[in-house]
Length: 255
Image (cartoon, rainbow, N blue to C red):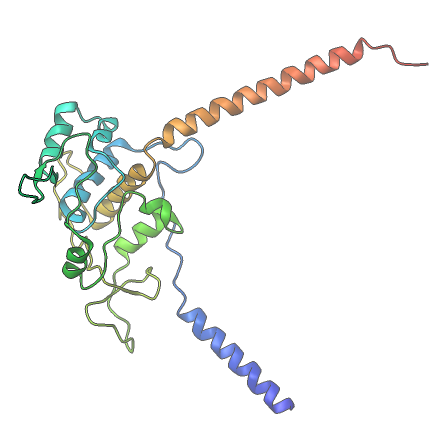
């Protein structure tokens, strides 16, 4: 009986060690301008991130919940937004013969999807369905840190690990096997017009900042309103405390 108990304990400890070894590491925390109660979006970084999205990510990933007209909040003019939208095509009205048509996107439209159907998207991506990026920062544990870790976490497959066909090793992806090939593969993959050096780290940081903004464009307004409300409540509390004290001072205490 005692021998069986010791065997069980050894297997339990060894099993726990294996599980711990295979556990996905937490992505390293990054410094984000939008973090904290007073955080704001770094506009130049967001604009650079939009460029990385358009030149690198948009070939596979759509943004179903973001309209082109929202880009005006980043400093783009109406004509800029129209020009950006016109580079893409969206579904148009059905033709007289019943066939679908295409038209140039307009500022009121949501970001164009790179594939016409889910089946087409899977066929082009080894059976995997590229996720929509418009809410991805909010939808993933560790948010921006996770997306940054995912973009920079591609490594050589460890010795002894068997990879499924078409899969790539990623340190921060659950299970470490991801169908998406490394999207950011080298420095200067894009050319920033503001002169910022486009290192892998910089491009990943910028596109994650853009995706964070896309997930919550109204964040700055919400935070500003929250600060105003907290200041008001603080002043109101102080005023009510002073008023209450004066009222009770005027009340005669019983003998």
